[in-house]
Length: 155
Image (cartoon, rainbow, N blue to C red; front, side, top):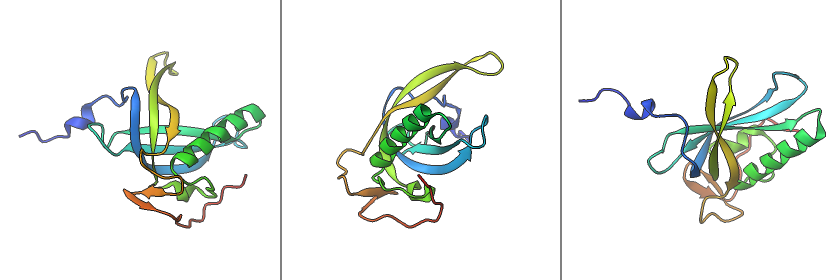
């Protein structure tokens, strides 16, 4: 009998492709270099196929002193919100449990120890196939209204 989770020993980098996901964590945090700049960080969990249960992450730089960085971050965040069918998102909590689809690629970077690391990057967000524009999918249930939360995002 194997008494450990084999999947937990697999590489954390997902192969390139499309993945249906559920939002399992979503917070707004200050950036490391400037506490006046803030980003939304999301944890997304794959909900189907062999990679079900695997997680990937994304950040959206929605408040930045550089207008171009802020505009790019807000455009990506808008694409994410549209994919999870919450285009009028006003607080972070509204994203929790919502589902969408992400096209993942891979990127490499050098960490602070000089080692080359690999990470997943989302190249595009979209709705889950078959989902209508006004439907919000949470925990596998399609519904037409949003659940109220209280973490306001002021734009």
